Image (cartoon, rainbow, N blue to C red; front, side):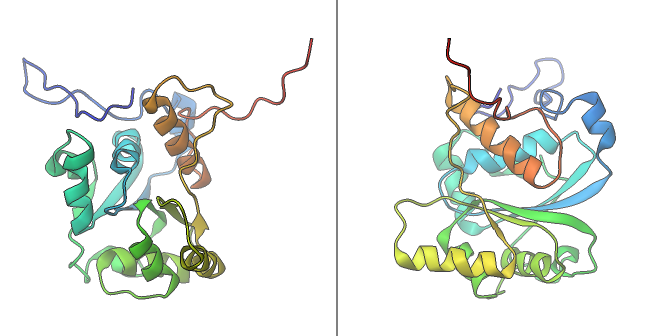
Length: 224
């Protein structure tokens, strides 16, 4: 279950509860996933729990996550959740600082399956749309596009003015997928956690990662 709180440490070991993919990936789905590398960016936009939940779901899966936290993301995480930044970075296979512009993920030769920025701020959207690669986060995104790999931008902003929409159009023209975290209400969610899981599950599915975190549209109910 999704929570704004980190796992409670075990009294025996002091270690947090396992938070991997056991509740969202079926055994058959997990077997079908090739060992791959996914670049994950988190910015200072509201919605830090979206990025945290994605990392949780993939933590014990064959997908290795490479996490880049912006400076603003490091401020937003403790404001919106009870997670510590160190606990979030521990969910990733490897974590990087934005200034590490020479990291492996900054090169197109790094064999990533794609990248997702979740949540994505307007500032980062602008950097991607204008190919302004002044840090590792924007550089990795630009590399993802130039190599023809999927780049999902989970843009968290509302309302949108014309400049925001123009940036989304530019990013989409470059090949990015604009994926606002719009709730699906056909599932009749009862908790924020259900909304988060549905959104993150759809993001993973769009990246080609099968999962059971979201419920597909079942079709219109027949009237009696």
